[in-house]
Length: 344
Image (cartoon, rainbow, N blue to C red):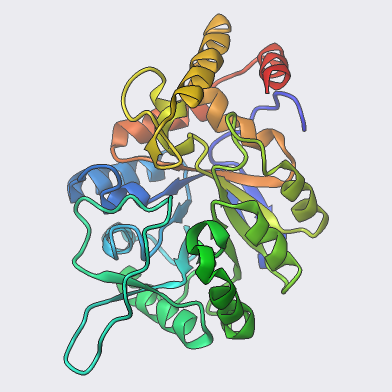
């Protein structure tokens, strides 16, 4: 853990094993799928333009986000903005296929919703089907190429593999991944169609186990290394020892650390329970004594750990992006970090 070293949004930081550099701040596209509430295409594209103008060059999406909608919107931005190949680093995810029933094809029963899936308010009219097999991951990559309009994609994250999402189905899904899914990702990398791969999850155990299975390059860990939840700290140490880059997502813990006392007081995609609300109020009061917005401390906190390559933040409007950019570059005194660490 380091002190209050200031990092700028556009600073490039290496994903060594993939031969890539990410900007210190990246933009996540989940909100563009209608997370929590509907979002217009014009608002999504305005947010993307604002991020680009601020120097953000890493954009993360997933088939799940709006059941294909977020990938379509990001692809439209890249194409219509005449953004040349290599100017941006694009990551998306594999493990879910977007499907519709048709004659001769019945979809498997829809699994129970996992705790991190709140649905999409204006997503596309598809159904997601989990598939972590060799064929499933190859098809997922093909489908994302089509939606994004890109022949190659920089990073692929295996999405929501693990016990929290799959419960009693975990052993089967993990066998699919280790029995063929990881091989698909290695082949895509060897062919130059992707530069690196890893996991994109909300739990640490899955990443820990994946590091023991294959040589992963970069992982997106959401919500487990934040001002509210530091449970990912041991995993970060292991990742650093293996040169596995960590992108810290969910740094607002689904909104509550950005919303403060108003707005979306969500924690792990649900309404925040009273004990979390109380903790956030105490964190906000501590930050206020140093004239630092709580959101600024939340955004900058993960960057104090040397294992974290970059931070990924979500937004639904240009104003949201501008606020995050300002918070990310706001000066924070070491004395505040000391108090926040002592209260953890």
